[in-house]
Length: 398
Image 1 (cartoon, rainbow, N blue to C red):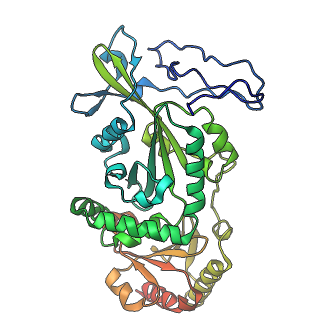
Image 2 (cartoon, one colour; image 1 turned 180 degrees about the vertical axis):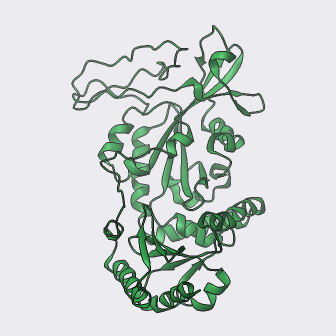
Image 3 (cartoon, helix red, strand yellow; image 1 turned 45 degrees about the vertical axis):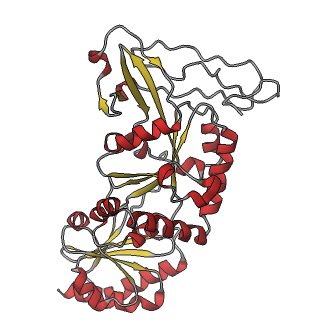
């Protein structure tokens, strides 16, 4: 199936002809009107997004990308699109220019070559991207590259079935095991990853990455016209976790250009509409949506500590509730099934007290973010909460 729709069936929109360019350069390339067959459609026609040539790079013969400002760099000639030689060429450009395209705090694994997830069958992906721009909340993306001849119907079912598959705990466990083995067997990759996560084990790091749905980075040479409809219809999966990026190659004045839209920086900064965004300003906001177990653990800790010292403050912020007495002593991150507690105490001292809850080693960069010696604790069970209360009481007295 090619990237077009038949106009014989009533109620189906028709995509642009294959040879029609889907991009326009701002103030550089003339915009050509989209050709759409005049057939009734239950949905509005969705035009492809503009590829801004200000987000363009010169592609050298060695495959390196160099950012340019197009207008001063060229004059006269209009860029002409030239198709990539398949998904392999796109992947080579991504791998060779990982820091340019995804930032210096990124790691990219060539899954097509390494085949760590080959056992997933139809669920396999081209690359695995770790994004550490936010050192506290790093993100994991499974990258899938599409080319103009891609069967988009099959693509839709592959990704949709993957969302159903990854919901199963056993599926996540298997992926964690495979990725952990793949990373530990690659000394260079292991060293680079360990430098970013500190003393945290790679297994613990991957478990944190896969505790929720994975992000899908959908890299397209030709924009998929129906994609916004799927994102709107399946808002909890496609709308939330599929991140589309268009990457195209052009020729101008003898040079090759690669244009990207949106940039990865813009893509990961995409915010929900204000009406959908949850703004937490009170303690009640943080407790909303968490399990009864989490709510009970938090209230028990708070009650016991207030009994010990009534001057303590539980200060709600947008992403945490801080425990204060003249200074911040701990930070409660309330999740649906657990509490991630950051305590302002050396890890060595924490391990002397905490025996039944998981302790997370924080990298130096994270300790700097919290402004001092600190450690993370994962609290999931109410029957082990007394040792947490004991540790916090000791920190308060110190």
